[in-house]
Image (cartoon, rainbow, N blue to C red; front, side, top):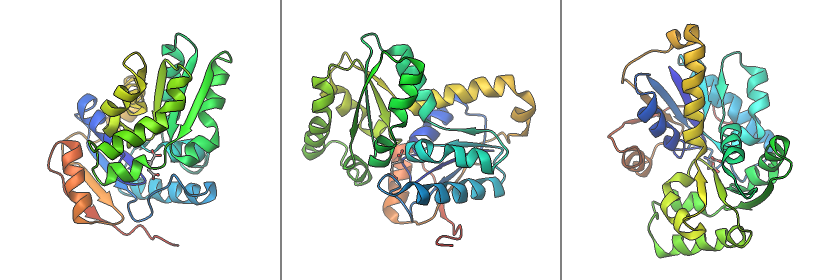
Length: 265
Ligand code: DGL
C-alpha cells in the first residue's frame, strides 16, 4: 500500500493526484486531525508527530510513505529517513526542482505555514540548485483555517489571499510554490490574485511524478504495493465536518475512520 499522511485532511490534495496518476494502487491515508495544525508548532514536536504518523502507516502495511505535509517535509524528513528503512517521499524537493526548472526571470515566490517558511528550507534548497534565483517567501497562516471552514469562495478569503500575495506580486515573481498541501484548494483565487503570468507550482503534482518514476525503476518495491481500490482513510479525530469535507474535496464518497495512535505518549 502507498501510505500517505498529513497533519489533517489537506493532504487529500496529494491523494487526489495519486488517484489521478497512480490509480491502480491501494492508498492508506492518515490525517492527524487531533493534533493539527502542525504549521504553528515547534520543530521537536513535529518530528515526534511525524515519526508516530509514519509508524502507524507502516504498522498498517504501507510499503512506501508519502509525506503529504510541507511542514513535516520541511523540518522532519531527515528524522523520518533515519528512523525508518523504506522509501519516503516528501513534498519540498519536488516543488523546488520544478520551480528551478520553470523560472525564467529567476524570481520565485513561496507561500506556506509559518513553520515551513521560518525553516528557510525553500530558500536554502533553491539557492543550492541555482544561486542566482531570488526567493520571496510569505507565511500565510490564515489560509489553512479558512480552507478548513470551506470558505473557498468567500470575499474575506479573496481579500486575505490578496493581502498575503501583495508583496510577492510587487517582487515580480514568475513562479509561485504552494508550499502547503491545503493551498491547492485556493489555487484559482491565488492564480487570479498573483496574476495570470505567474506559474503556480503544486508540490503534490510533482511528488506524484517522482513516485511514478521511482516505481518504474524499482519493480521489486512496486510488486509489494497492493493493487485495488480498497483505500483506507484514518484520522486521529473525527467530526462530521471532516467527513463531509473529505468526500467533497476528494470528489468521491469516502469513509473516515477514527484511530487512536497513542496520542500524547
Ligand atoms: N498540511 C500542512 C502543510 O502542508 C498545513 C496544515 C497545518 O498547519 O497542519 O504544511
